Image (cartoon, helix red, strand yellow):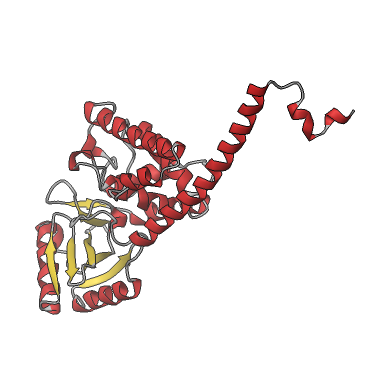
Length: 313
């Protein structure tokens, strides 16, 4: 009768079995303690990536918009302003600070480089030495003396009333529907208790440490995040979701993902057709990152985790 209580677990156990039970219990306690430590470390990293002075950034963005009064018809400020990767070009819709609707219907025939050069000249003249102003294929980047970067993507309304932005691959305008993308990302983030966007930011930071020919575009990472966490019901923490992202992205990267914004047929057309050598190589890279995370957690090493972000162990 007395053997039915909690002590019954140890009845008829060999010394080896008892040691195994105790070891597993200790391991479980150790893992739980490390998860707390890891969550704190990732939170600190996020604080660094989110360390932008939002008030100053908004004030500077407002000043830039004021400089362009008369030449713009409106702006669309983005959900995720500022890329965590140290790029001086836009590689994803949400890596920009503002989409700027340029008030000139003739630009549809002239091409985006004309719009970019015009924006660059107006902003440089207005700031007069306060910041470095330059443009790439898609965006104008304003770099202030304190290192803050503000990126602006020009857009036009075509004659058929479609919103168009510079193409990432050629000097031409590309149709876009930014609302669809923002709605999809916002919805999935809400489904993940607000943890998807922090997970994406951390994934971008790791992606930025890879050799350039192995990096995914920022927009592609966001699209992978939306797909990877469809129906996700597991632990809603960045420490759990980050390795899950890379594990699922390892499979998702093998096939093209439909572009929700309409910029192109697929988000990742730059990678070519399904299951080609490029996609297989990237799948291997993403899988290796996921394994490094799992191994770091198993070893209880925040140092190994930090190394993924290019930080000293």
